[in-house]
Image (cartoon, rainbow, N blue to C red; front, top):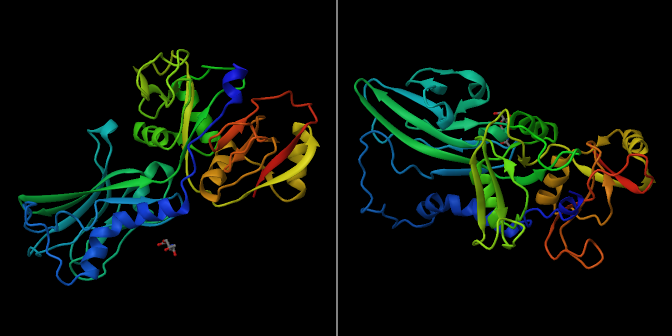
Length: 355
Ligand SMILES: *[C@@H]1O[C@H](CO)[C@@H](O)[C@H](O)[C@H]1NC(C)=O
């Protein structure tokens, strides 16, 4: 068990350049329109919709937790009577319609927990774009802008991807201890959610190689392998290994958690603390011991690099490495390394605090 825990390599940190590019790429179609007076929409793409601009200005929004996002939906022609209905599609609850906002030319009405953070941009009279503020981890997914006009009905779809980091989580009681429901809870306790398949897939392309199977959000169990080896599903090609859908109440695995930007920050206090002393050291600075998700977030978004093992609130000892070097774990990839869950009385480690 501890052998698996010792090599704890997460996704390689994307450089700010790459992250900016990702954001800019999403905006290219609109940037292009602005920068070139000669821009002509692609005539090969069928324009089937009468009332809504399709394709939308951009069809994917990428943002971090806590940020605001705008989902474009522009009317080309205004019917005399109409409503615009914004919904979030939830494939796992196909029968339920998750309405966020219904509006017409004069008024709007928000619905549900997303409605509480939603508003209409209304940049001009043909603008039905939705703004969602203070994004949460669960907000990622597919959104629909639907124009309802008597019997006619048109929709455009926008994807929201929350930018973040996937981290494997194993119980202090050892490998494969969590039912699905427990896995969901431990991710929440570490400031995350259970990862989706697409989040795990992206993490794999960014460097996550992990030889223990873990629950995903949809109740399936997978693990990502970059370097195929006999102990990790044999000599198949690199990829995501799948156990398929497992029994949420009976089967036990690790968890793949997902987190994003945090509002607070992580700092390290050097010392030879027991677990309890580490907590007190943080409290003297008006902080608490950091959660595993906090440390991954700092590593991913602030390139946090500290070559010292420190206690976290769950009793584990970890350290984040952005610039891999010989005397810091000796692993050539960036990542958050783990010493597992040492005896809490050991006076060996520093403290990672979160404030
Ligand atoms: C996000 O939206 C909220 C509420 O609409 C607003 O108060 C805040 O200033 C916005 N933040 C940014 C960065 O635009």
